[in-house]
Length: 411
Image (tube, helix red, strand yellow):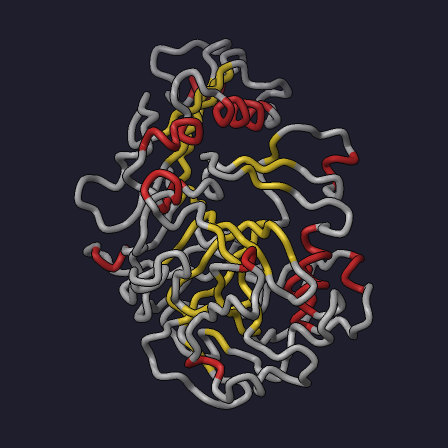
């Protein structure tokens, strides 16, 4: 829940994230954690004692200070859960002196676990060096490192992996919560994506008031990525429409668990653009991007809705969400409308050819508000993860989010 809230991209506005971090009086996340812990029985019954704390130490719930003053990377909040079951026989533990001054019954057992939401952005400034990240289920829509709402910022992330415009859009003109439209840098109706500009990767994001409706601005181009294999967990609606169901389209509608987008490494280990794919042909809802996103987000029935300007982010299940059919009302904690998109390094020379390699230096996590018939997507930024153009080594996690969740409890 914290990983999709955007808190790890905003280390300076603590009050904005109090609900997420578990401030006294706002027990939404704490209550959820307690309920989840009690689903796991101890001695065939729910543990009567479950305590949830947020922060660097026992009793702390302030996740705004974890990065420390002067730190160059974002907050990495932790969640600690303590579970105790006091009514368990512990005879053998007493025999082996595992319970100091204990008895053979009713002494109870307890356990503590701590997990961390880790944003690797700017970790190259640490003595240990840059921490790479390699998420899966990434959508094959590669965007340049150009922030359309902050054109002078130098992109979403620096080449060293730091977030350039930290904070929230409403409170500090930051990147978290900003909204813009992504559209394909491909000509509708063309066979492939090569005909628009010759060399796609040297384009700046377009801003053309004569061509685009006002609601499409500001905007940013995307190019299709080369999807290496068929995807898994593809919903049934991916078989609809007047198209062949390409690997590219299936990677949008489902979960592509094989294509690699590795930071700091050119293809084949980094990322590859596929200009033989045209995601907006034909120029109608049957195009690969429009159809795939409509299937992913249930937009033809009723997509999930993001409440604007509210932190932590609040998502309401749409009528097309299976949870709605089960009678779930109110806010939900995850959504198929949340997508992870790779960001390529625009400072490196552009490479020509139908399938040029690119260097990935970060990932953008967005909420898809709307998909349009021309293959454009109106999105809101939920989080940013920078991993530099020099990162190398094994990934920290394989998941759908660019912000890993990892267990950090010592053995």
